[in-house]
Length: 77
Length: 478
Ligand SMILES: Cc1cc2nc3c(=O)[nH]c(=O)nc-3n(C[C@H](O)[C@H](O)[C@H](O)COP(=O)(O)OP(=O)(O)OC[C@H]3O[C@@H](n4cnc5c(N)ncnc54)[C@H](O)[C@@H]3O)c2cc1C
Image 1 (cartoon, chains in turn purple, green):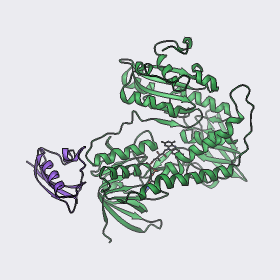
Image 2: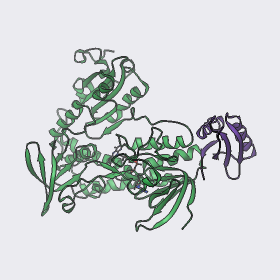
Image 3: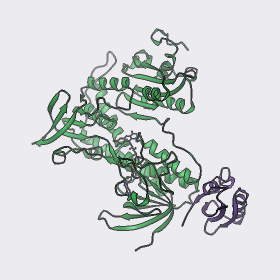
């Protein structure tokens, strides 16, 4: 297993419920190890097993696809 | 050293590709994505300022002068239209300024998430762009996890002896002109040269086109470009094909061109020279080597069909991208594709069903593959070329010098290409685009209702010509 940290900018979050929805959505995805979402920064840190999921696949998670109004991009510092 | 201002997306350029990308990104993120748009020159880039918009304005004005003087129906008298060229050019500039304001400047003001920076952008590293002012001094730095290069192109100037001393105009500078030149030599017989050439011809200039290849518009089907050339010649345009300008000089108010043709050398003397020999990408100052963004030998940026460059996190769109068609519509689409993929959507650019056009009168428009391209790829192909002589609408208006060519895959009758020479080819080609994009067959076109009498009916008749002899057909046969 190759553990990789992926940083996301997440758009469309307005409250703690949004944080829970996005976190739960990401956690369901195969290959996701853990998720930390910040409402204040509009970001998320996702640890993945990159043998099972590619960083870009996180962006196609159900929580980021219509009719959901959340969207994300990958940001790297 | 100043710290870069951070953004989610940095866009270098502020033309069609940049605007469509910024607007799409804003829509996808509900206006939350922070975007830096770094650009030089007037907002809106080539299309609105020095490209599509002024050229179509000039052509329309010129047709309004030309057509009444050349009526095509019996009983209509030749009518000379009085006009003031400098006022037409004033009107053109004022329209451009209105279009720039309403379609670009005011539009972007509505997006508070987009911050405009004026200056030339170049890469410091894969995430940082340095902005320099006209004096070459740094005016700021911006950084982003994703960067879109949308820097467009500019006219390329051939290396001809005496050209810069003699003086010439290009599609960047012609819009400042106030006096109609009595005669012009246009170097280059591509879309831009022919459009500007016919506009000036219709106002009354003598126009000579000098082209290095053996035909005008080499991307078009042979029949179509030959028919267009014949029509332009009948209006008085002169062509030198397979000809090269070796030197240029000035004598008083006249400009002379030494032209090497296959028949020998000739000297052409005119009032003005227009250079329309193609365009080159604005990639020179971007510092692309520093960030490993690969370019082709022409300096165009190589991308995948998802608009990704060879460097991760860096995308490109518009006229700076390595491809065969350079269009506003394509620039805008590529901007959308790039941004959608930044959001993980995995969409691809489809060049094959992209429509292109030349706005001469008659217009030329096309989509998909030519006969030669499809045959080369597939080994065989089936085509029909329908003449507007057989189209009722064209016979009524007297505009019969046109053709519609359809290329079909003989395996299943799917339409794989269409080219049209007709007064309104740019409007009716969309039917070809639907057909190519969705894999429609000639039977799909035949069984679709078309208005009689109309030019669009010509597309249906062109499809019917695969199954019967159109010249022997009554106009009501389905
Ligand atoms: C005369 C003419 C007629 C045309 N007619 C048509 C037509 O009828 N239909 C059609 O579809 N297409 C037409 N085109 C083509 C169309 O105009 C272009 O394909 C389109 O405008 C390209 O858009 P773009 O965003 O890629 O580039 P541009 O619009 O050129 O924008 C690029 C911008 O980036 C800026 N820039 C360049 N380098 C840098 C840098 N390093 N840093 C910051 N900024 C930079 C430039 O100044 C410019 O503002 C025509 C073109 C011409 C010249």
